[in-house]
Length: 234
Image (cartoon, rainbow, N blue to C red; front, top):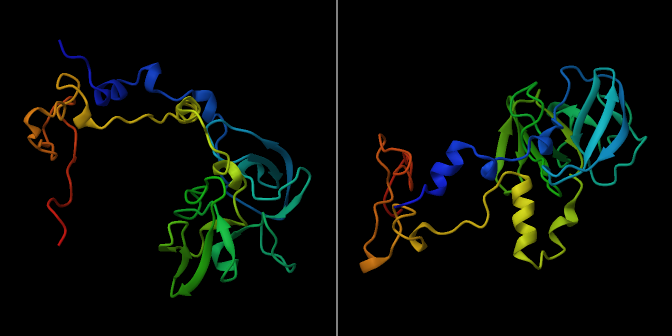
């Protein structure tokens, strides 16, 4: 008798495939209004994030952001435009940040609290302003346009050295992934037995259909789900 495939088990949401809620107790988000100055009152570690978390108090209340490289407790950061020179940690709208400045934790839409560039050691660069859009070079080297009223933090996310030390053992990577609710190791479907996955068993080396039907049941809904296009790019 076949067992439930991983796709079904993850969809059910058992404790085996769920992230601990405690790992994401801290919500990274800007308050609705940012004015004056903020003070870093605590730097914290979080198993669900790849960078240290900074607890900041300002006129809008207490909030949490990914720490920048070189941040210390008790440090003051600007939460609105000021006449002084920009420094790492300042939270400003993109329209107030000069070109060639490194930024992170950029909002997708004004007021959403920050969506892009939040992993340890990453940053983007403000490249140009065209019309009503500010363009930022993302960590992927691609350029993306943003609303000038979207907020961002000046600097580079802390934790850049997390990839320098080798993991040595597969077990370490397993627990790192598990803390974030990620499945690892990921076994190739064609390497499984036929009872465990629709692509399983390489008997005869017959290629399986990778495009799932739209009305396929959960155990059959694997491979390419509603792809925009199929076939080899020419």
